[in-house]
Image (cartoon, each protein chain N blue to C red):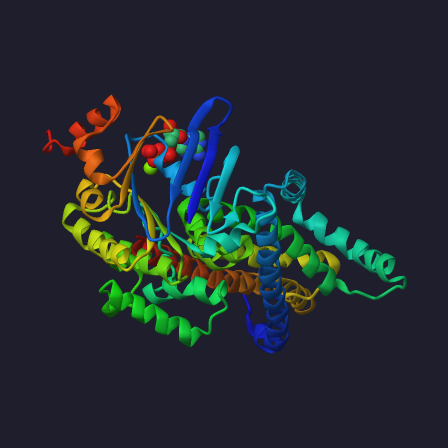
Amino acid sequence: MIRFNKVNKWFGRDHHVLKNITLEVKQGEVVVVCGPSGSGKSTLIRTINQLEPVNDGVIIVDGITITDPKTNINKVREEVGFVFQHFNLYPHLTVLENITLAPIQVRKMEKAAAEQLGVELLERVGLLNKKDVYPAQLSGGQQQRVAIARGLAMRPKVMLFDEPTSALDPEMIGEVLKVMQDLAESGMTMVVVTHEMGFAREVSDRVIFLDHGEILEDAKPEDFFTNPQHERAKQFLRQILAPMHQ
Amino acid sequence: MDFSSIVSALPDLLQGMLLTLKLLVFAVAGGIALGTLLALARLSSNRLLSFLAGFYVNYFRSIPLLLVITWFYFIVPFMLAWATGKMHPVGAFASSLVAFMMFEAAYYCEIVRAGIQSIPKGQVNAAYALGLNYHQAMRLVVLPQAFRKMAPLLLQQSIILFQDTALVYAVGLMDFLNTARSRGDITGQLHEFLLFAGVIYFVLSFIASRIVLRLQSKLAVGQN
Ligand SMILES: Nc1ncnc2c1ncn2[C@@H]1O[C@H](COP(=O)(O)OP(=O)(O)O)[C@@H](O)[C@H]1O
Ligand SMILES: [Mg+2]
């Protein structure tokens, strides 16, 4: 479904943020990407829908070579949902309008059909009663669930998540992870940048560990957690799994 | 002071006010539309486009409005003649309207540009991520938010424009102030007429600035 072949990206002349990334995500697979802050996780996941262009290498999504300059990138983005750390809901639109905007404008869906779809998706994320309110009136967890519904409204083949719970208060993380878990169980192909190791262990099929723009580990969760190969990964796991040190 | 002749001049004054308001409404609409296009051009990644828009804005912000109004009065008929091959009588109203639109667009441009720049990058990213193209992202996501944010400033600029419409006396248009002045001359009650005009300008501008304030506090509450 997603294939990276020797992808490199620089910011400016000498900041090498993605180093020779080669990676494959199969249909229906759930892949967690983790690594220290600044290691390039966001950049990596954003290259999958070309919110970040790359300097060289090939990225293929659903059979389409998106790194080919001739590719119509908007067409690919229609098939790839993206959930941001800070939700990025449209504040001037209601919850339902947030969800129906792209289906109506991009997919040219009838308004009534799009609204029907929106209602179904809101039901799925448990927020049907909020369909006519504005995002500012929702909690962070609710906003993120709406953002997921908004992504799903395009009926994407892949969903990408960039730290979807790290801007949330702790008591709201669970409700978002639950929605993501249901989605994973429904067979969605997902790439998730997260430090929620519980989610990685229970839901994901594979864990990728990124450090300084390089993939150091690409393993099944049980192997990653019990037997990481690199010292940097061990150190990362010790830090992240240690009880809150404050 | 003798205000008696103002009463009999009221129909004329009303005519003048209608011209002023007509000029205002069209100039605001045209100025904001053109200003928005200029703002998008200034923010465009196309260097040439951005340079040209920048030049336009800086040029019109550096010359007096009175100059633009008189200049357009003479030049617009020639431009039309050049474009269409024959002379058209244009009239002071049309040429003034074009002058106001083009002049005010430079100011509206800067307001809209600041508004666009104040919208977080994540909004555009979210629009792109859903497959919207640049035009859809601007029209449906960025500009509605930018206009909402900038509504007080746009209105403020329009109040200034309202006062500036009085400059059309230079090309002989009978707007509100020019009507008042001329009726004052005829009746020998110039002071009274000017005083009356001043009160009317003040009241209208004052009401509009109260609306700006209301808008500002409402927007401050609505922010997330
Ligand atoms: N737009 C940008 N311009 C320049 N440098 C950037 C930009 N975005 C990210 N970086 C740099 O690239 C590196 C990787 O960033 P990022 O992918 O956001 O890391 P992560 O998500 O793992 O924290 C960081 O060093 C960051 O400072
Ligand atoms: Mg990040």
